Length: 402
Image (cartoon, rainbow, N blue to C red; front, side, top):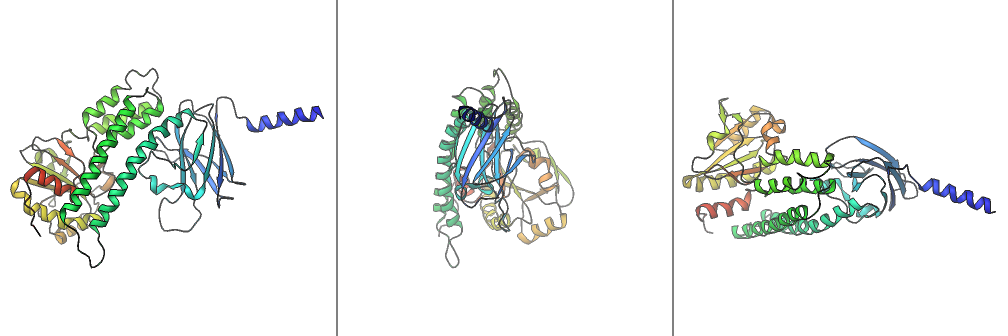
């Protein structure tokens, strides 16, 4: 009997152990998950590689892997339902490194979908994750950041309702939209301060480098703030893949951050003539680079607003340069004519493969960059009511009163 007990104990130990130096992830998921596939892949440095997969049995799954330094992983629960919507798989993202023995418990329907975390760097906070010190640090950061994100989302929902009041209803006064945008900007400022301070007040590590990259990609980050983030990692005793990736990306992000000068790209106008972007900037006027495309519904829906502000404020010195993300010249020219866009029109007809779009991190449209009279980038957010508020601040309020 004693011998049998010893053998049973050894067997249990062997089943629960994992290879020395590796990490182990054990999950317990409730809900309609039996037989569902779950995939393990990286969620930090962009990669399509699937590292491993498992089938959920009795609500359980297990992964093991090797990570000499902390890496941010994604557990992707494959959605089997028929849908015409993209990115509907549910996910749990977490940090793991060798010798971590990670336990996860979650209710399937509480998990975020990929579309909810499309911008990257987040996770499903409803999942309970233990066994990773690196992930604990990340969650300390992400829970607080998420508070700011949710506050912004609530104002943004109100802003969308303002822009689209419903059939037969008139949009409210311009001041309502501008007030909501100012509130979102105030939250953005607090979030930026928190993110930057979190990095600067913690010891450099691979987890912190991942967080630092999120900070360096903020829409309102300026060149000096990126420099401070980068200096924080200069004396790190060891620079793993995430630290190296952060330093590389932060350096390129700086060229498109607030306070930067215009990048030297050449595009063609509607006649095929070539123009340098630098030729439009730094001549004593505010200049808006407006990224759009003929196929972009939201872009074209906003063009009447661009026509309005151009008619009002161009005489005050406000210039617009529209840069198309089209790759079909005929469709581009047709849309310009249909929309009666009387200001400068440029494109390289390479859509999102354009080096300009990549350099300025234009990942979605419509997008806008505003340069001041001295040629410095002053905002990456000048659309809709944000544009109205900025124009009033720059030139005074000459909008018609209703």
